[in-house]
Image (cartoon, rainbow, N blue to C red):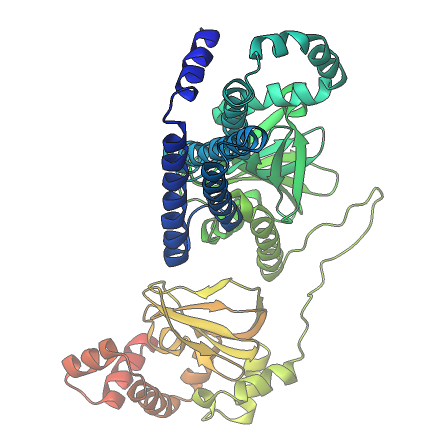
Length: 506
């Protein structure tokens, strides 16, 4: 069949219209790539500029050779030489055109604009090999079958010397056709201790990009002969579970520890809500209860970031509850947990005195409150109060910065000396906004149980507090707050005075 095909092509070459065929071919290729070059310049898309310009230059060279051939056709030696040269250039231009249409047009849109280098190189090679065989038969009038028979022994010797390369090429076909090894899929190779996203599949190796943005080249044959774990793909919507082991002390009840860590996982931005994260008791160790945190990520690329954030928030949350991460040891040690952030009562009193809401209190009252208030530290991203939650305390910022958001939209920030939560402390209202730590923040918390004895001992403070609350409400630009006061039909001071008397039973 191949011999018959080459004979037909040879008959066409012997026809008298060969010059016209070459002229039409060269002109068509030149016009096509000129249009392609213009579109690429206009839309910044297309194949590499080197390939486009090289093909245009080659087509112009072919036209020049064709022109010279028409002038020297009668000269025996030079006429035949120019005819073969122009035919070879025309076939090469045609090969570039066919290769572009097959690889950069058909495969580009067939494979969602992501053609692996393996497919691209293979198809390009087949196109050029096909045109090379045609040129041997049509231009140089050689018997292709005889050439293939003569080179059989040489081909066998080369194949024996390139066993590894051939094995990688053959394995590349299986890798490219495997749905578990598609582009943008995250995989882990246990033997190499490597995890990365597949960015390309070539003839010899698969290219992985790790979380450190390093490119790892893994031979195709190695992937086929070893255990590979598929970690999912964001484009395919596949998710795999991640496990994080955390050890906490025996003095922290498991139910309480599970509630703390479950809340932290649910608030992480890259942890999927469905399936929901789960925290389970995993083991009883020598000095700690081991918990297994199981969660799913929307993208494996955030694995390291999420792991670090979760561990950091667990430390802050556990420390804030009055417990500590246990130290590994193999001997009995009498050790009591120490408060990591120790603040003297005098310094706490100073923080309270800087709050304008409490400026009507006396020195004795500040001194009394300084021994009762709680000192709390929150880590980056932790929520201090959440909109709509119940509360009976206010917070004074001693150090750091917090972000304030209402209905998911950020509306402001709080810094050193600012106060928030006073409405919940003095009236029992639900939290009006969500306040989260932008970095590590140090807060002084004043609860109702702390200030209630002070108010009962001096009921006149209610007048001063209601006046201050009224001033703070008047400076609040929220439309909902103004609407609430307008519907109440009372002045700001009278409205807050009524709420204060009802809340404290006076």
